[in-house]
Amino acid sequence: MSDQSHQPHQPQQPVLQLRNLTRVHGSGATEVHALRGVDLDVFPGELVAVMGPSGSGKSTLLTIAGGLDTPTSGQVIVENTDITTADRKTLAALRRRSIGYVFQDYNLIPALTAAENIALPRELDGHSARKARSEAVAALDEMGLGHLADRFPDEMSGGQQQRVAIARALVGDRRLVLADEPTGALDSETGESVLALLRTRCDAGAAGILVTHEPRFAAWADRVVFLRDGSVVDQTVRSDADSLLSGQAAER
Amino acid sequence: MSIRHGLLALLEHGPRYGSQLRTEFESRTGSTWPLNVGQVYTTLNRLERDGMVVQDGEDEAGHTLYGITDAGRDELRAWFERPVDRTSPARDELAIKLAMAVGAPAVDIRDVIQSQRRHTVKAMQDYTRLKAQALEPAPADRDEIAWLLVLEQLIFQTEAEARWLDHCEARLIRLSAAAEQRPEPAPPPAPAPAPVRGHRGRPG
Image 1 (cartoon, each protein chain N blue to C red):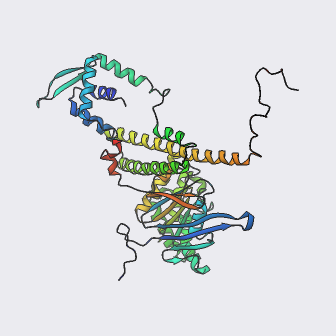
Image 2 (tube, rainbow over the protein chains, first blue to last red):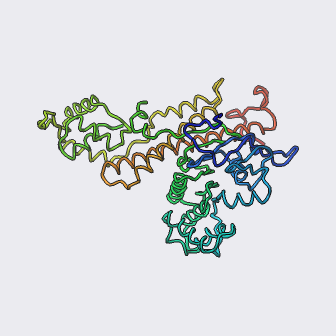
Image 3 (cartoon, rainbow over the protein chains, first blue to last red):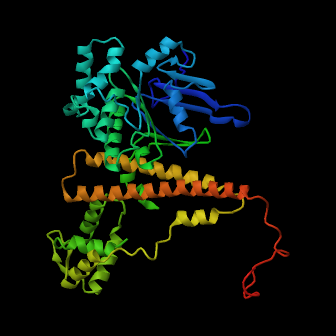
């Protein structure tokens, strides 16, 4: 009757667990340690921002967390499955069903409408075209993007495309969204609205990792993790913002 | 912070008493810069001395009311028209601290930078959350709009600070890398042909 997950504030299991993750590129004289023993848990409902100078390992962390790259050592556990030891088929299914990606350049398929872009991974996963389509439209409606359903990517602004990409990342049962500089190509006002959407999706129960070098966008996260030279050097936790209103912050 | 002009601006809406001014000042700025009643009365006394406010009777509860004078209105107009002076910057503790940390014995300036960065980003997280709350639903009255503007100012300020910290760190790394790459340490100064002022005209 041991209580192994003694976490009073986070009663749920993490969606993603990174355990002592290392990644070495190259070997010998050209060896580069991109990650040196990183541990990170991301819980349902939590948005974690990863910050750090270029070369600190933040994008490597994200690609490994999403199963797009393999760590040199360590574990990546997504919804209780260690993807570093999973067979190819399990990994492919997990990537399709559990993990969503949001990239800087949106990566929508140009020949498909917004709804079709969102429906595609569900169809590939064996759902009927009709079900996938209605799910996609529902996902867009839920995010206030219903009017974009039949538009092609080149008929949408960058901010709209990125919001559709977030809808795609979280359609179906997927609960983990990995976003790599999702605001990179957007002006700051549009970037804010993309972050606000990501925040809303996490508040609704998804777990998210956001890689960014913009403090203003990282500030939407519950937790900000600082990477330097492949290691987590520091992190912030969110405080009860109401304490700021009690005048405590102004006593300095 | 100009409490003086803040009070004049509030009095332009009509006569008010001291603690009422304090409450209105704080609700306009989300209590970001809390005032105590003592400060309010001290300021009102000075404004009265300078002819910018006058005592204007009492309300039913016996509070002394203050009203703005024409001189007070002129001062207020001038304040809105005049930019806030940036040519003599206020002392900034963080800038002073980093300046002192350069080359300080037993201090790792990167640690100083990181602990500030954590604090600053955390403050940004809190302000950002308050901003999301302030926007949902959209602010309607004067106080809510004013509070949103103040909050966004705090976000911009902390953002600038976080970016400056990133820049300091990158700058220090670049400078130390450049120092390591110099081919050989500078020779001792004595025998080197130091440039001498007014020495034998042009070279070569």
